[in-house]
Image 1: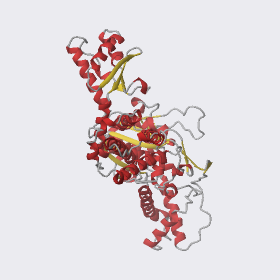
Image 2 (image 1 turned 45 degrees about the horizontal axis):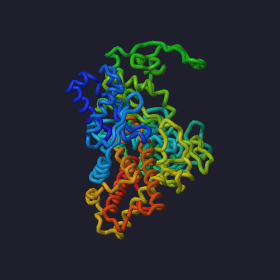
Image 3 (image 1 turned 90 degrees about the vertical axis):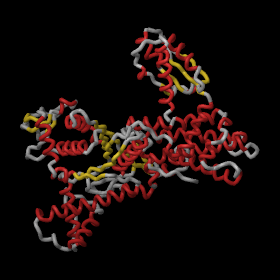
Image 4 (image 1 turned 135 degrees about the horizontal axis):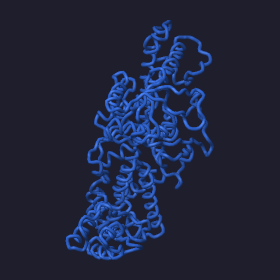
Length: 583
């Protein structure tokens, strides 16, 4: 249950009651009323702006409306205190019994706690990674992979029907370069001596395995043939080989896409032709000449007629070319075909996770989706900024050109899947991220992975000790849900329950904003609250979880610990991280 939605529903009922009694006019914008946590917790548990947003259309002073509404809210049994602050904000402090019930909710729901009907089963396509199949995945791909996968999980928990998709860019010139590079390694595998890799080809050692695999399959079949005969076959073999490696690398991070779509297959099936036909029928294509780029004009700029898409009609800055001067389609045309294809597969809501170098491409694709779906589709692009790889504070040098880049597989081998995934979500995706291979393994408060995992491990440790020290107290969630939770009266105990009760709202907020990093932030705050309570118990023995002479209080505190372990595990699951039992 999202407690803020629950309280908002009750608030609206009170406002409707005031309307029925003649205290408020009909037709007020009740949906504009918000119930949320106040910025300063000392003001109360929740606050509402109802009096501020309704006073003007109601013809009342904000304070007068706030006073009248707060008196009504005081009568609600779960409200312990209602007060008016500032120009008309209403702050509510809720009774402990309300929070104790939330503890039962968590224990009864288990890891499903936080699931929401927000998405109402709406289909959404989340496309992420989508690296060119020309090399292994690197640290540069890791962030988008983790962000996209965690976002898909958040949306699923919020009630969306999610399809995870990988778009294979196998139709451009880069895959021909891949084929030529693989063919060189194929000749090497056949016994030829390969000296320096010619300029323009991929030098990576990883292609030796591709060349060897081709040689094992076909022998010397392609050695003496002209390029136009061997290139299609070698290209197909190399793409398949690289995609198998990509899937293997993603598996190391716990990522499994539902769909792999081929750009080449889409184009060969007439995908671009369908786009041209669709846009032509609606008068959205024309032959024109684009103005030169602003600033310094490129030396190769020529004012030539091109087939242009009327992108400016849909929010873009300029109209966009769909056909190159040599008559071939632009990358943009292919991308339009792909997004039209997704829409026709039933995905009116599409989310793309892109690297920072594609930031300038967002507006044109948004305009394309608006046009191709006749304003019925939505495209949301999540940009992932660069990751700076460090070791002990010193930059780790990488160079894809020389073939010495750090692969995703190497990172997983060094720090582990869970650390990699968690750290990639410790910053908002459009912010730069420093990933220190040494610091992420430190066992300290400054390492968020350790800090959150340690909180879960501590919970599990308490529950294990309880099995031997207080065996008569039920250890299962159902039994703990039936404990006397009103014994939990310490402010830090109640504060922890309040934070856990906020988990459903965190899920919905992360889903609505497409920001999975909010989960990591929340878990870190939750762990901090628990560690604070733990430390108080070290100094004050009456606050320890296991009280041998008070089984009722012990049962309540074990319920608190079990609920916390449940929420942390639920959050880590969304992030794709396994909670640890001990550390």
